[in-house]
Amino acid sequence: MPAPLTRQRPRTCVACRTEAPKRALVRVVRTPEGSAVVDMTGKLPGRGAYLCLNVECLHKARKNGALSRALKTSLTDECWEDLERCIEHYAKEYGPEERTRELRSLLGLARRARLLLIGMDAIQAEAEKGKPLLLLKAGDCSETVRKFAERLAAGAHQCLELPLDIDELSAALGTGSVQVVALTARSGLADKLQILLSK
Ligand SMILES: [Zn+2]
Image (tube, rainbow, N blue to C red; front, top):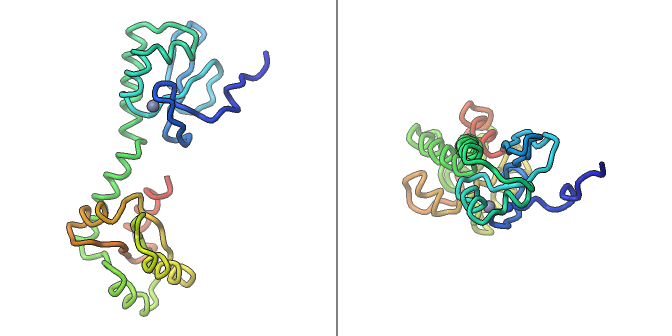
């Protein structure tokens, strides 16, 4: 049997037609019995279709028949319920929303524990002492902040961009407008933040 052509197409949610990076979509595969299961490995054989990792798109796909059409099978109520449970579970575990929530709470925690340097002045003063820092900048930070972070990252320090804008970062910290924060690199907290940001 020839390889399915769907492999070459960009991954698109069958319900909302949004193209998305692979990790934000979940693959649903038709089983030999004509039912369907969620395939988190992305490697199960069989006809597959992609859905956003949220139950809204599953509901939409059920209503408009998009998933049944893509898989060329009709699904039982039981199967739809199983899919819903499964997608709910993975959405909690892997969803970008959950990661962002965790990130916000870690940043808030770091600030309350006084482990966070807030703003360019505080960061510059600490950077001059030579201890390696991990800088975290807001997605919409100014050109000045971006250059400042780049300059430090060219030396002993590291810089990562947060999936938060200035308002979201400031809200997470409970402060006025903040564009960049930093903490001691290679600390437990810095490691945790880096893992969250690398997913
Ligand atoms: Zn979708």
